[in-house]
Length: 453
Image (cartoon, rainbow, N blue to C red; front, top):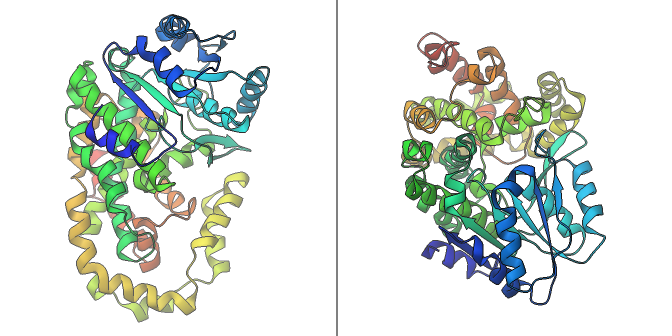
């Protein structure tokens, strides 16, 4: 375990133990008894994760003297979808005993176990099966409720087992999706810088270091990750774990999620790719959102907002009713629409406060511009990194057209209250100009065309 992880655990988090390394599955039993002395256990997995680690984890718990309930094993196909219905099913199945859940899981099944355990007043232990998400150690569970994906508040696992050899042998698409999830921390950091400069969401330097400190190293060998290189898997896994721990420390996903994630959230709420088998992964959608946002940031960095014509912008400042009409036009899905209207209303700046916001943007731009320029990477570098790891880097790879992707820039701005560069551009009246430039001749997406190659 790295010093960074040890430092984070010392903060008194929900997670008390991270056991990472090659051949660590036999340590599951001892870890469980240290964290839950005298408790019984129930394994929760699906056919895939049980086939990969189930028997070895079961044997380790048995050897440590842990009483075991019958395991709860879901079908391996179709892939589980983390919604409130399935969370309720797991909660009901766990309620028949007081056993502590031990999830053999990545992604959805870990979130389901996290939420079901919390609802029953228990903590749990997770055995990671792939380097595919940063949610292993995060507070909260990403659950779809009534068609809207949201973070349900619940504690992180008491402990996690991170078997690097198992994760290195996982299907390459799972490693690639974890990479896509992690790479968005680059433009997400720029979004946080913008909010910090405007006094809307100050950066916590320690939390920033937990995510951004190991980030470039964790992303540094995409080709090695594509071949299952153990050292590369270790660095990626540490980056993912640190991201989750940072969210615990901060009690928010702000350190690890920016507008690039909102592209994925929009697609997920629309149900896009859900019917595929396997479903279109969160990380693949986030990776594409990262490309989209880094392309936008390249244009933003060239702006000179110190010359922003505030009076001209105020002449066209919308009323809240006009802004609501804009949001409704962007979100034809009724369920998404109502949620987006509320989120957008909560961050709307009325006319009486608009001048002060625009003056602040203008006055802070000399500080904002160099900070975001040093945070983001060129979009073609990001694209190549995603290519090398085998992740999605072009909308055609997921059957999304360029006009559909263009709309996502606008929809992403509406679905969360968290301030990002999309909000700054909307407020300054520049969002249309910047997005248009990406899809016009000479722009990034125009140059990429409809062909991912």
